Length: 251
Ligand code: PEP
Image 1: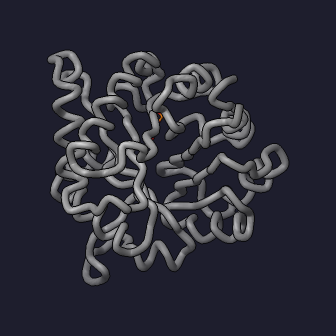
Image 2 (image 1 turned 60 degrees about the vertical axis):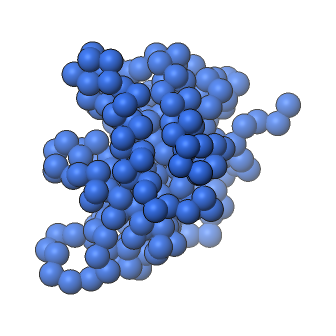
């Protein structure tokens, strides 16, 4: 049986300066080798993009992306990173709509959509993050919230877009709690039906994120329709991340 292609995304959030990122990758690359059918993506802070891209340059199946972008091409947007700036630093992908962007920085669905379209137009692979908050889950609104975020976030996106969706229940991010494989699988089905309703390919890759670690990754990847994981905390240590990336859909 051929292994299902898997995508492992490391969201470093506000950690690992350029020198630290280089040390991390030197260590990581002693423990992990590129593998056909598996992509390992690093999302460092903007200041470390170039260091990571330079260290990974020419190695297949590894990529680097921005954690966030501004939709405008350039201008007076202090602190923001445009698609052009991210690409210039070596990014080939971007996270868009991460829950911390939505709920810490107050990013709206409409802004998320502008970022998605700017990143796709600029030739980046987009990972659109969606997910409900705890109160929404407890009120039985998970499917409605995820569907709303998808419909708004992907408005105007063409079927051939270079797109991945990440389902990240907000209450599971950085909390040590995670959705059961069954719950995650059920939301992944909702995501695929919304993609179908929008005329987008139902074989779009869909990741799970939220307190994924070496102990639970295999169970999650065993769920049909979970095509990989987006990981924060457990990606910050190169040994832990290499161990996690060694998981396969069947292990
Ligand atoms: C994330 O940052 O997207 C994330 C899922 O974080 P953690 O793995 O720490 O829950």
